[in-house]
Image (cartoon, rainbow, N blue to C red; front, top):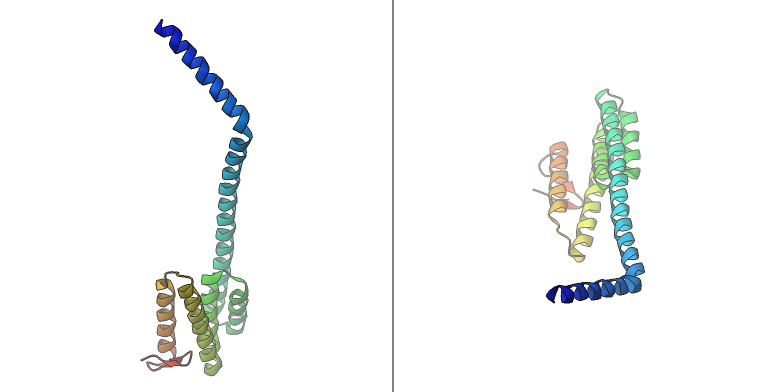
Length: 165
């Protein structure tokens, strides 16, 4: 007798599931499709960003090789191009290297490039602070920039209108 009840319960459950599937199947399929599309879109975005960073890294290496071969004008142009087009990290590095290349011919222009780079970091840090972003990466980059300016222009280098002692 219990087998009969089990069989009836199973049929009732199956009918309820079929009824739910018939009623909500489109939403379940659409939800699964949206999840798959979102994951695919995110992975595609990550791939494109990694590709841009790899291309910028190769261009940065090429510009660095030009600097090592004493082709300073070409290297400065390559770094300036990178500073305009590369992703954020390479943009900053390219600005700093362009300033280093400019220092050999015009120290004042190089100091201005260092100042501009630091000012951009300070603006980004302020914007991040207002948005509640962790500022430690900006502080670390700023410390590195100030260290480079000190190394290039002496211990009391004035960067972005501030005297860092």
